[in-house]
Image 1: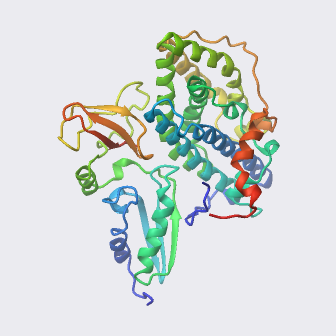
Image 2: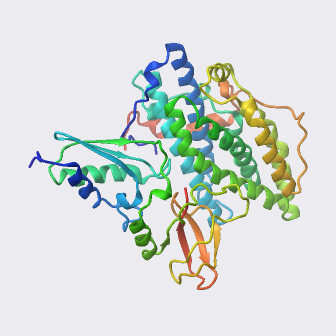
Image 3: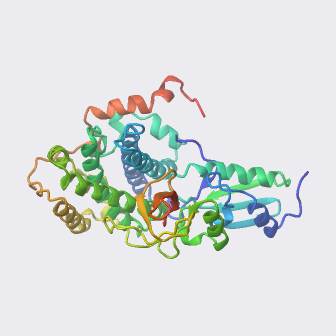
Length: 167
Length: 272
């Protein structure tokens, strides 16, 4: 099967079905890492940007994009890895943030991506506990289970949780 | 680790426009940056499974991964600048110690946790303001890599600064250990901001930041952190050790490369 009538809109629909391998409730569109799609005849180019320089999921995401497009008969795919402008958590969609919280990961607090990172011993901002929704939480470590997360704990329900840290 | 990525990096508009000699200088310089991140990242990864507590074990593995990510972008660019068909993997796995261009600081052994923290703090205190300036480089690729890495470097500097304070203003044992580490490692910091001939030429060409301009912010941050840590400021006249950026390394680098390059040396051309 060879797709001859592929459109940009169709490619975007297919990309909505490609999930972040590390947070499989988020599509790569929710995450905001797809920066552009171009279709020229049968040639499809997808521009993606890494969340973190060393994100090990980028190889898997590139492969998953190819596989999803291939399943629709789209064989000529170029995946362009774009560093600039650098990804920021502000690009995560509102739908993505809701899915993240429902999954048990506190979403990045809006607009703090350029906050005072060198505020020693300070935390970014009030992070809401995804379990009991309390704002009374504390930072355990800026570094968590993956490059994109920090470790937090709720002072009210005592649940430890991941926070998708601002970037 | 340095798997071939299917996604092709973008060809910078400026890459083709460089005269051959600038391109050569830039190749050596980008290698120096890549080697620096690779070797420090490797050192930090040696802590994996040995950290003092789980959260800090994870922190060091995370920082190692950030540095390795930066390393890959830099080696990919270096390979393109060289234009001789070598890949990022060739550059990391198939060069000898004398061809490595990392400053001596980053190849120093981990020692105890305080030693690792002081080494990291000295590096981060250069890396973060350096990347902030590199973001404005007219070289699009370097600017793009810096724009990405600087956000990560901010977290690193915050982490190592806080640990200097905790250790210095902690228990008599932690204070004694961090003082010992400072006495041992401070002498390696000067090399970071002392330009080689290659760096001078690129600074004069306006492609990379002037390190002298970074010094006031670096000195201010060190003074602030040491004061919070109740630690004395080390004497500026400490005997400086340098040479790594020109290939003159301590014996430690050879041991790192023996381990890091083992698989490619034992099974040439092996791919994942």
